[in-house]
Amino acid sequence: MDSKISKPSGKLGVLVVGMNGAVATTFIAGTLAVRKGKGVPVGSLTQMGTIRIGKRSENNFPKIKDFLPLHDLNDIVFGGWDIRQENSFEAASHAEVLNDKDLNNVREELEALYPMKAVFDKNFVKRLDGEWVKSATTKKDLVDQLRSDIRDFKKLHNLTDLVTVWCGSTEVFTPMEEVHSTIEKFEAGLAENHPAISPSMMYAWASLLENVPYINGAPNLTVDMGAVFELAEKQHVPIAGKDFKTGQTMVKTVIAPMLKVRMLGLDGWFSTNILGNRDGEVLDDPGSFKTKEESKLSVIESILQPELYPELYKDYYHKVRINYYPPRKDNKEGWDNIDIFGWLGYPMQIKIDFLCRDSILAAPIVLDLVLLTNLSQRVGFYGIQDWLSFYFKSPMHSPNVVPEHDLFIQHVKLKNTMREIMDEEPVTHLDDKIRFLR
Ligand SMILES: NC(=O)c1ccc[n+]([C@@H]2O[C@H](COP(=O)([O-])OP(=O)(O)OC[C@H]3O[C@@H](n4cnc5c(N)ncnc54)[C@H](O)[C@@H]3O)[C@@H](O)[C@H]2O)c1
Image (cartoon, rainbow, N blue to C red; front, side, top):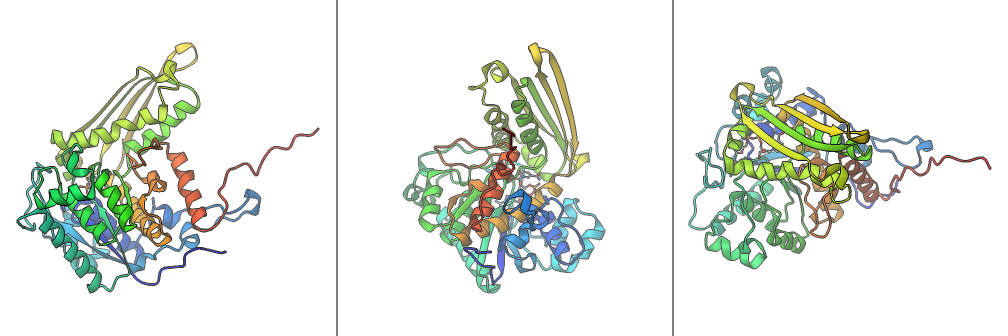
């Protein structure tokens, strides 16, 4: 097989912002366990998935990890930042996602991992206090400190490739302002401590300046701004986001396309969740919830296209609630009540009760995204990586196109881009045409 790029030779540094959180520690501990042969990477398309190459009749379905020149899990070196100083073993134990047996399998490796001091501002995450944080006179100085961290980490581990992934808390909704519009204005804003520049934006800025791709796992509008688009283009660095598509939204992006392809109508969709982890506590703050709500609400509208199907989808009622309920910890329960209608307008209902585990669903997404975003960079892709929209609740997209939310269309797009990267033909499913007898 002819490929444009070859297997990477060096190591891949993964810098996790919020590395002591539930998602981050589940991702790190899980990846360490898998590479020791102590676990199976269930949920990871790059590790477990296959990809069809050529016509169906050729029966060629290699594993994605054998088809694409991705970094091996053994190449990954973990680092990152958090506002709490504890090591990754302590942090993973506090997160209460993985059990003692799984954590003890990788205890030594986790105990050796400590976060670097974070850039934190309580105005953006009201429910948390930062203990392990950087200080400086200006936001520009903070960005410079983050840049030094990245360079030191790269040097220490003799890294060739690096990726930053935001697994930090959801920040308060920050509307876009003039300061976010161009590189020049953003740089001036950093020097003047502009209040609309959040910590996540500073991590992204530092990463891009160091030619490190940035993945946004939260709904924050960190990299959805003119200044970052400009910088990513200028530096030729990929950016991807936003908000990992895990529990309820994953289900929504399967059910909504089903309604649409069968031309079934929708009267209302009520989604509510209970969860008791720190993410739930942060989202209990109305500012942080607003950021999440914006991310969750747009999904159905964009799939159903009410402007094209007014009789079916013009007036449906959509409500999303997230309730902090400590006893559930990371084991979220998401209920959906969907009022639909069929032939001649007769009403029906769908009820879904998804007892999921948030970080168990998110960890394989983080793994796939770091491997695939690094691949993007090695292939020469830069700017918004909309081929990775499969992994996001609120996929970033160019201003002149509408985002694609349908999980299966996203999946086709993801796999066809993988084929394109490897100079293989896209799969259109037209090679199995029915032949008519004449
Ligand atoms: N778990 C899921 O299914 C899921 C899905 C989509 C998105 N997300 C998002 O992923 C993020 C992480 O979720 P989680 O459940 O791990 O939350 P968490 O609260 O357990 O972890 C967040 C971590 O970020 C740290 N942090 C906060 N501000 C920081 C800063 N400025 N710099 C460095 N560290 C900082 C916190 O100390 C904490 O350790 C959240 O934004 C969440 O909304 C999670």
